[in-house]
Amino acid sequence: RPHQQPAAPASRRAASTRPALIFLQEVSLPWGRLVALAGRLGYQVALGTSPPEADRKLVTLYQTGLEVNASDLEPGYVQLVRLGSYTFVHVHLASGGSNYRARAASVDTIIAPFLASERDLPFLVGDFNCVTSPIDAEVQGQHKFCPRLNAMLAAFGYVDLYPSLHPL
Image (tube, rainbow, N blue to C red):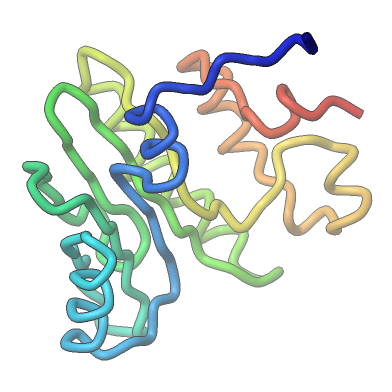
């Protein structure tokens, strides 16, 4: 009889196919359509506010029935999401080659001070619109390298999971 792996428990299979939280950037759906679509999928919506200069919204979808608190640390760029004892900093830093100063400013004036104020470090999620390794900067361009982000990640002991899970 061939060896078979035992089936994963239903709760673990469901969690892997229907996450509790989904973090989105650059959502352009109107509010009503976004809420309707999320509802059909079994989610509620935590919508961040846009900054005055741009239509940038951070959206967190969370499973219906969960108690999630969301607020903006920097409208359109950094959203704070709390689910029970878990805290997430949902990030969508400024994009484009000319916005390296804006990315560094968000790191220095918003994200790092918040991390320093927390007893337990939150999860950092989202789109940083920059790279943290010199080898990636060779491909993406030096303007995409963010030494301030790199320094902050090192200072607080964060690890970028993607290269850790998928080494070259």
